[in-house]
Amino acid sequence: MAAPDAVAAVPEPTDEVLVKSVIAGQRDAFDILYERYFKRVHRFVGRRMANPADVDETVQEVFINVFNSLEGFRGEAPFAAWVFGLTRRTIANRYKRKRAETVPLGQDELEGGLELADEELGDANPLAAYERNERLERLHQAAQRLSRDQWELFRLHHLEHRSIEEIALKTDRSRDAVKSHLYRARQALLAR
Image (cartoon, rainbow, N blue to C red; front, side):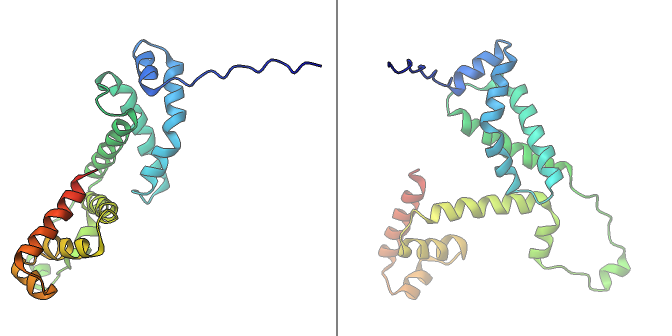
């Protein structure tokens, strides 16, 4: 008895082909893109926003923006990078719109000593908190590419704002050695 003929697998269309199809008016092509990216975009937004309702609204807004902006996709970078760049901008724009209205403090409140630490003020501004978290995430990913020595020197110089001389004294290295290690650390961070 002969085995039934195997059905040839139809290759999935690339993102670029789907984008061209959407621009040409094929609604089904956008549905495929939506299915392809929904979970990843939802996870990405969910890691940056605390309120599940805001996450869902933001994801919906992202896909509306994707659909409305498809004609602007030039294909110079992968479609996924373009989608996540648009996602970042959508999140940032939502934070800008959601800023709470502020009421100036009266003179008596100012004299009463109402002072907040910088950390507390940072959390009061959702956009600043989002941007800080984005920078920390990128910095954490970048740190993975550095040796322990390179990271220590980078941290001292760029995060703690220590001078080359201070670092040289603290690490018992010459100024030239510190500069060289910092140069190599920056090169490692720039090489993506």
